Length: 362
Length: 184
Image (cartoon, rainbow over all chains, first blue to last red):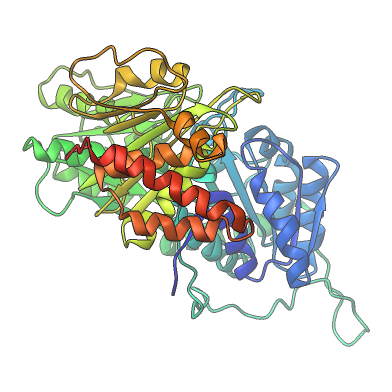
């Protein structure tokens, strides 16, 4: 197996192709244009189709139709574009259609800026559209992990018949790192045939109807219960979490995801060299959030530090997990500014010295 | 052991290219690498930079605020990145385009007349290779031969440029090797 040096965006595109994705619909927006660019080059080579839609709204409805045919489908966008897709994503969830959606998050609100941010955490995990639904959200911290998670995302989407979002930022998209694609990869789930797909019907089976409209409230409530049971299965079976420097004892537990967690890992190396015991817990799935893992890891620590590129979003889930059993501290940058290892080191020291004030939400 | 460098200059000087070549060579040498370009609203002729990390361990932060080395191909780059260099770090200054020296006294400075050397070799556009060579010579981050292999791969479609770029790399390497910096 040889490693290739690839841009994150290209690795995401190649991972989709390797997963059997044949159809891509999207609309350009910085900083993720290399994904549709790659797909427009690559899909025709494998007998697939790339369409640049007239808008994100159109793209989200094209993936709806294409997913309904049973093909593997992907779209990608960045924050403002994802907001435009919100209606379509709600319909996809209501109709139980498997698609992979990549959000290379940029700073907001509004048009904001094009530099890295984690300001779409709430949107991705709590409210990606109207109605009562969830999507699996996977957050890579490296180019290799982005490629791996995109491949897993297709399996998970098919298995749960649900949209799956891969949430990255401009660093993941723009950075080049070595990537390896395994030729012997097998699906991570047992995938039944898509007997529900609208593939044309000659009368030999009941007509398959893909729909999210249920005017009978009793019928809709049954549908809501069915969806809820599915989300509960995701919570039971799909939580993924990684740790760094958590093998021994530690006094401060950092919780961070995505590229911010990479920055924190460097800070932890520096702190350990000075004999300061700090560890990292990194949620890889943001929905489902690893509440139990956060709670268990925090038992060892005196304090918890949440590091985010937002005004404070994941910190609410961390505080929900901890239920005030540990003081929670917060370090953040916004607007496209990045947290540096030095800032994390300084904050961790301030916590250990009692110079940092804990924060409360709710 | 981790080595990192911020390479910076005008758009068009081939900064991103030499950064990529360094990352490729590091990967071929079995190291962990990351290459991160500056991206943002830039205009043609504006500044551009990239950060390359080469390490024996998986790369932590791909963003380096306080680099071990800076390669400044023009004055705005020197002014932007010189203050952030670690004490004892390596500063390569392209003296063909930058008329001032370092404003710090705690750095290892290597002056590289990159454009001048490239022009002597017949093509001023190879200045980036001279600079890359000087960085390699001063740091031994990656074996020179590894980078020469990458040059052969990169310019496979333009064979006329292969020898020129290898020669430019070697000239820079000689210059850098006279100023070895162990920790950069």
